[in-house]
Image (cartoon, rainbow, N blue to C red; front, side):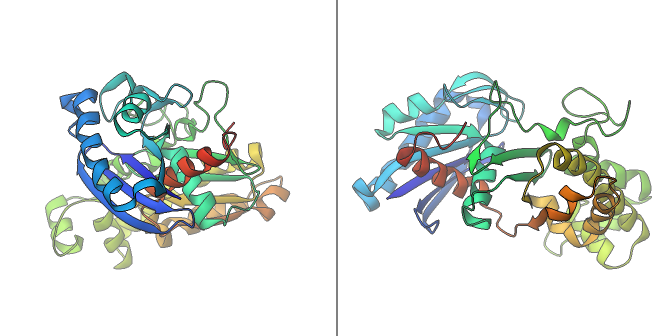
Length: 319
């Protein structure tokens, strides 16, 4: 069996075909262009699926969709996605009608969590927390081998844990959220407070092909021993440790998996994060938990494909 996984991003949408063993067999991508509306998006998306059909025919059995925002997995709709600007948009049913394949939809962080469960943890019947560290922070929860939704499908909004009273402004409209300290937009906002000349900093430390003032630039600067960069990453790790400590005390997981673009700076933020986790008064859950940083940048799309296959086989793959 082969499943299609769709990861809807604010700029691009990735479509993959993955077999039951997790091997990528085909992929495409196209511009999301959310401003044209959901109906136009579904039409363009469904026009790509026939190429997968021609190649794999009846082996294709399901579609999994991951999208950022508040998703209703039972109805297969986006209740609200700030990144896409969509409200109350049904995607699973229209795409299913156009493709003839059963479609299953989740928040993109949940799909990344399922990808981590399948590909990083080998489907061990475990409790695992996956944090996607990108522009914001997405969280997916696997409890005893099943994806956990909570009462309204909103479980796992750890990016909006309050780690500072009346702290930095968050994109959600609140203050002091974990995301306002550890999302890439927040990390770079802090860097701007410490770096006097952004342009010169980017010329010196930016990626050769793209001299931009971004987290890659900040990582390169840390590797070169730049004090401002080292301070920013240490502060990021400290706040991330605070957020994780609360999650670990609440859920007592076997694993924490970190993924997303910011996780590539692990060498520079992990020491401070681990120091927070070591300095907890209730030691037992922290002695047990294993923290893994995934090098797989496609956990979301692959997880969506594998989750669709799992739902096709076992409808109770999520609670």
